[in-house]
Image: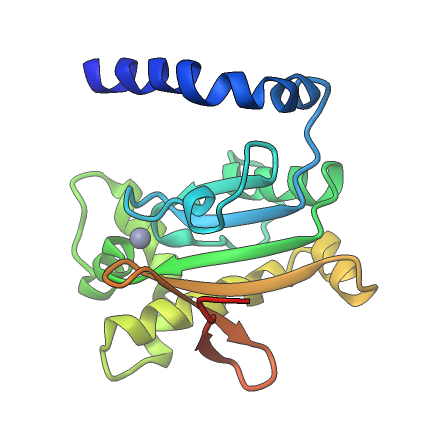
Length: 200
Ligand SMILES: [Zn+2]
C-alpha cells in the first residue's frame, strides 16, 4: 500500500496543481467522447495508450475485453449496463473494443480449462465462436477474431445498431501489442487489423 500512497501523494504534488481547473469542471459532470471496452490486464491501460486526460474515456474493463450477447432477461448484466449508460446517457461518439497481445483470458478460453470457480471459464466461453473461426490455434488470430466478435455483438444491442445506422456512433476494433507498444486498428473495408503509424 505504501507504493499506492506514494503515488497518490505524487499526484497531489505534481498533477493536481496543473489539473485543478480541469477537475473542477469535471465535477459538474462528465462528457467522455469514447467508450473503451478493454481487458482487465494490468499491462493494458487505455488512458496511457491513448494519452488522454481524466474525463475523456468511459472505460469498461473485463477479462479478455468481452462484449456479452444482448440479453433481456433479468440478471446482473454489469457490462451491458455500462455500455447502455455510455451510449444512451453519456452519448459517446464511438466505442473502441481494445484487445491485446498475450491475453490470458483468450488463452484460458482456448485451453478450455475449468477455473476453480465457475466465473472465469463461463465468462471466457463467450469467445467460443472466435476460437471456432480460427481453427489454426494461433493466439494472435483468436485475439483479433474476439474483437471482431465483440463488435458484432455490439450491433445486437438495438440502441447501438440504431445509432450506428444513423451515423451518430462509430464502432472500432483495436489490438495492442504489449511487446513493442504498437496499436493496430481493424479496417472495416477488409476486416484486417492494420498498424497505426507512430506519427500523424
Ligand atoms: Zn487480456
